Image (cartoon, rainbow, N blue to C red; front, side, top):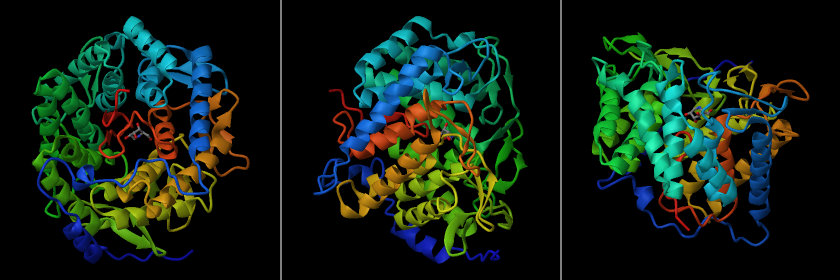
Length: 483
Ligand code: DMJ
């Protein structure tokens, strides 16, 4: 085993931050850039459209299994041919339907979309959930799915449901002395709990709530979500680092580990995204401060590859260099925010893990090459980064083609190892041969990677490749075309 070498990437980071072009005006420069071509590559010799057709066929095949075995339930169990619930075992809310809406729209699966919308109109009753639900999961999956479904179809009922669910979540913000939301609420009883919250769950709210504010004209949602993020960012350390967990009543840090891995990850995504989507300059400034500190204190090279360590927020000392697969989203975020070379390098690090494992394990130790968590929850982060690097580099430009090749390779791998007769399933152990299957089609599979692959492999007329925004759950809030 080679001992890890650690050096900061300060010089590179400083140069790249300076070069990132945090310009004025609404949203980042790439959103305004003129792209040379639409997505579908017309290079001689490579026609990706059959791949897109295969993605669409796989989604439709799994949708039909969901209809047969799990219709109206939250999740399909494709191995046993059953179903399970995500929020409340006794009260399904059709999570899969909600997550799938805009993907069905983009794939022009209009009959399936219509039956999904009809189910929501006739059956969705989120207020009937009688269990403590995470504000974060409810927001990114339910509120976000309904909002993008509304933007895709124009159906007012979907917006109405999104607002009703956000109203269930709002007391978690409004009753907090700091504005940092409590972690759970019971939709039936209104009971709030969870005094300790983690940053991903505090901060992955603003693009859904901001979109809701835009669509309803009610600014309370955006204000509450922004206030929560500001409350956390105001408590950054002298090194400009944030911790992992915080007491929502006192504002004291409960876990002072700084990391881009979960349970913090999408906090940083939404600092950038709020600037991207709303052009709110506060977020641009915060993103620059926080990212400069991350690149200075967390970026590390191990065996010549870029990784992101977990460090103490006050002293910058390394706590661990173990990586979570969920952290691979950060490659795409770096690219979106002007650090394309670092994003490319981090994606390459994750790609190197595929020399050892057929698909990415949940946890990975770059010092030993061992999978520290051997499952694969059918996750989208690697493909998400391929998509974002591809979009930032410029669809149709030859350098962007690499990202499509990587996404295609991952598609083949995941299909080979996750496909079962009734759809795609999670994997319990990627280190066995063959891999050991679990029994679940994750909700985000419907809203994330199937959409990412499809968008990359064909020209989707219903999507604006030049000016778009996809949430952390892959829900499209900007860039849907009604045609
Ligand atoms: C999704 O719900 C979202 O991408 C979230 O930000 C992180 N976890 C899952 C996918 O792994």
